[in-house]
Image (tube, rainbow, N blue to C red; front, side, top):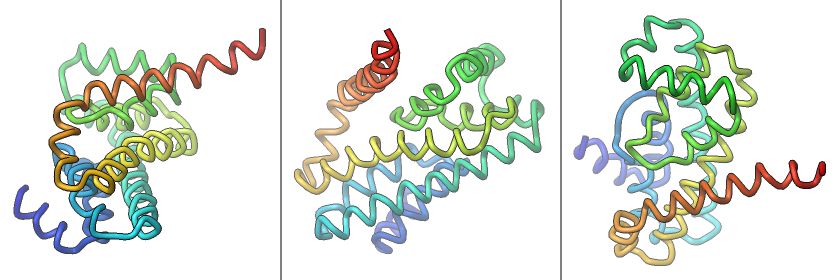
Length: 189
């Protein structure tokens, strides 16, 4: 994958968008879009970087829709190729119970979080594509936004910073999700 990532890095913004699509459509890149965003962010103005971020999110969302529709068409036989039965059942339970929040957390999660299994499962379970798309867009905006911000402000040191603290950053994002989910419940009371 390194030659592909090098080639896409040379393409600049278009490469990040293409890699985001390929990663979300099922080609494993082990965090390629995040790393590429980190690397190319310092090369662009903040305004251009925001377009790059939006394009990356759009590419990822479109890739997830491809996987979602594969899940709708391929059903259980296709899903059986991913992970063990216990893992698939755990994912199935999370989607059945939390739907939007489960997909959001999967889109936000750093590699090797099983986002592809969540998206395929959402297709198999018949989740509405609009809800899936919204959850992916919000989750990827946060995830890619962190990578872009770190790349923009810390340059080459950003990759080291992210690799050392990605669990802390991920935990902070999950805490933010929990807070966002709790606010409507507290307002109702």
